[in-house]
Length: 451
Image (cartoon, rainbow, N blue to C red; front, side, top):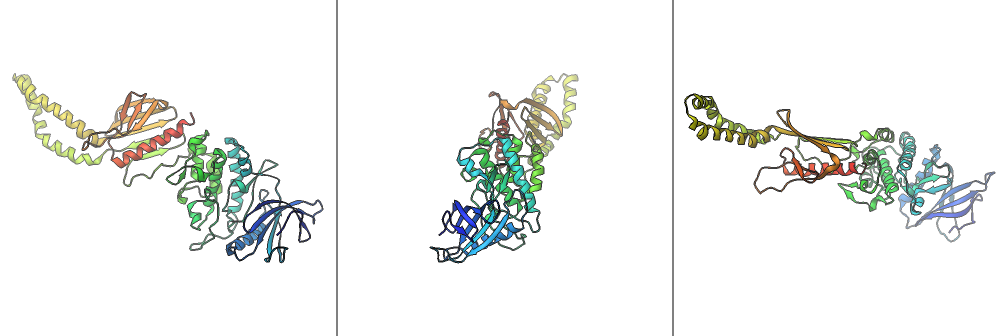
């Protein structure tokens, strides 16, 4: 076993143990071979029958990768050695020496109760992504695979440093290749658990790390919904920044921001990003939703299923409508006022009822618009607006579906305003209605945190 004060390779004098697990130790040491006796970090790995072979492979890979990296925010490779025999150990030790970065890890700062402002976290995000641009654009790309607060150092120069490349992957991701599953739960996306890490996997870890800094809570301890980390209700930050972090932590890698450079560009235009949908859009739905940090627009199309019934009823009523001018002429010129009251007026009333029951549901569509100040609902028939309402978004008290009698016609989404007034959209199928209610409620909840 090694201990403080011990001299390794007649050069590295151990000072303080920084970390330890079953087979690894990390030490702060002094490099006596340098004129200024610089401080360095010495990572030691002991070989033993209990150690998994992958651990030695990852340790060797870390040394090989660090040797070829040259970035001011990544520790520099200094040396690699093997200690064949150590007192108290029957197995050899491997050693990796790298430059020491004075400062504290973000995990240490969190453990001390430090809380980060939004502007600080955004600056941290930019610095991490700048490092990843360098790593991911190497040939082949270098994936860190274990980005988390304990592997990010807030240096004494107030810059961010990325350390601990023990999980690094230095191979091009080829179809059919498999890699060691590494990483820390809560910061690792699903595809990495499947051994298929890609550059976007590091972006997920960045997003999860930012969530930890903003909330003070590890992402594994936060609630999840549709596999997404739910954190927006725990912070008071710009909704555009919330949406941007959401794009980093999309559970589906195909919907996530794919490169560090793309993530930096998206951060500059964060207010143009839309929040994720709370649940998948129902199959076959023709509802259109456009969301951004500042507004949500919804177009609910007409219900085509009513059209056949409409034309069937119109066909039945056509003979009566055809004779209507003749009956009106008789009623006005021939003194047949009784025809007007007995036949024509009930017929007109019936036509009005049929119009409301069939024409409006079949051809009416609804446009809904919400921003952080106002909302507007427009009812349209054949593309022309025939009724509309507008109000303050902050006065919306409820979004729900009204309970109706079993067997009655489908209802739409109801919006309650000022606690007394309510408006209902075009009729919707049950699954569409539930989905759209959740989408509207989710957006209103996020929007209101920023008012």
